[in-house]
Amino acid sequence: MTQDPTRRSILLATGAAALAVGCSEYGGDDDSGSSSVAASAGQELAKTGHIPVGGGTIFKDEKIVVTQPTQGEFKAFSNICTHQQCPVANVSDGTINCTCHGSKFKITDGSVANPPATKPLAEKQIKVTGDSITLA
Image (cartoon, rainbow, N blue to C red):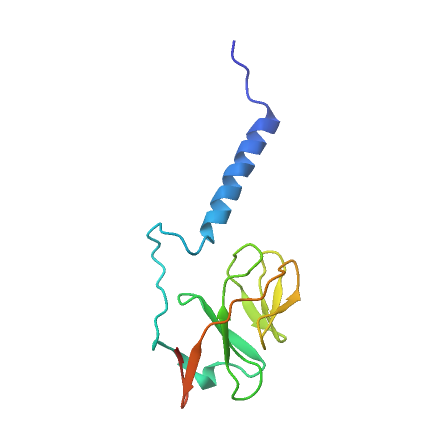
């Protein structure tokens, strides 16, 4: 005699499957043959005039956020939140913001400005030559 599945067991199975799919979407560094393009040294990201002072720009394909905390000072960080590896969503009011769980990071050094993240964004190396920002 087989037992029909209960509503609870169906919900548990569905939730586990959704969680697995959601986590794999932001996995990042795996060997699954992902089609995302890795950024390479010397690749131009932007012109300096395209990065707002006191803000920043997210380069999704390159997985980098470039900020300009003060006029002429440029910083770069990973665009992957250190909490649960969601890509950050925007830069505003002096922070790089992950809307998945509310983490915020300072545009000056990538440090945590608002949890739940506990680790800073990884710093990336860039080079500014004239009005061009490239990967170092």
